Image (cartoon, rainbow, N blue to C red; front, side, top):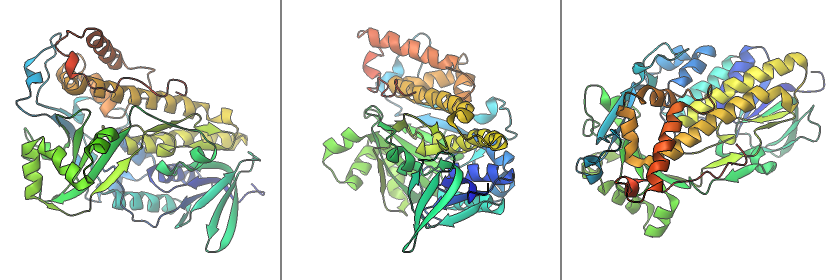
Length: 448
């Protein structure tokens, strides 16, 4: 320790970095977080999944989160136009519906002691989590942009950053890249692989006074996360409560759809919503309280997520698609998993890549399952709702939606979803064939 300034240097103070710092500081390691922004800062990705609760409990953050007054999230719902012709058809006893919902409490989840999670204002949530890491003992430097990491001596990585006009070097035993979609080490080490399949594009904003009951069926559903299918290829809308009166709305489509339209983004956003008139009319009656923002070209993987003296966590390691609000959960759980391996490595004094095999195996498995789930979801399109309703598969689907995807190489429900997709793909006369989505292949078979 005498030759280094900290045990662990963490680049990025978002959920992945803050969770990692919290675990390590709580266990007594000396760690530092370098965050390029000044918190609070706005960020997309406002809905959590129950697997995050385990992390909050383990780092002692759950009571703070409970007391913050964020909307509670009890489940998820999917909607489509009531008169869509696809819903008149059936496939092997599976009938899609125009409104399907699921509650988290339907499946008992190890380590999770409540039937809800939260929707959060990420500016407030991320600040609270970073402050929690600091309270546990982590050093936190905001407004500090890391310029690069020298890994020439992996036993003593050096983090380079600028403070005013002064170039600073900080020596650590281990570097964690939690820089999010900036992917600092991924870019520096040329590890990044872009995904030509999930080349999605999101336009999102917040609305005050939107009536969340408009498309809700049943008691309590206004506080669910809603996924509204649009009758446009691979296009959907998220609906997330931010507060009692503010709702986040985002349109997600393939970037090619946007490029072909030749419309400005505001016009494209509203024209997409017009394909679901009830949703469109409700939003027009509400007040937009935030400028429209865009997220694009965001799906990628890394050829390596750890090495001698370093590891990548959260969005710095992998990002696929926001369809099931997996981003924050994966970030938090990657912090949990890498922390376990770091603590064991610190005891041995060995920070070589082999020390992080457990982290690498579990993260590869979990994100692969998540990728395959989303891939099959888009391919099934509206037929996915049939799996949610079918008692043979409902709990298995719920397990994935809860964020539990690390303990099996491939959950049985994914195998069944793939079987049905393959059968329909091979038969162009099948009644479901023309309703399959167009996302069909994996770009990452060589790196996962």
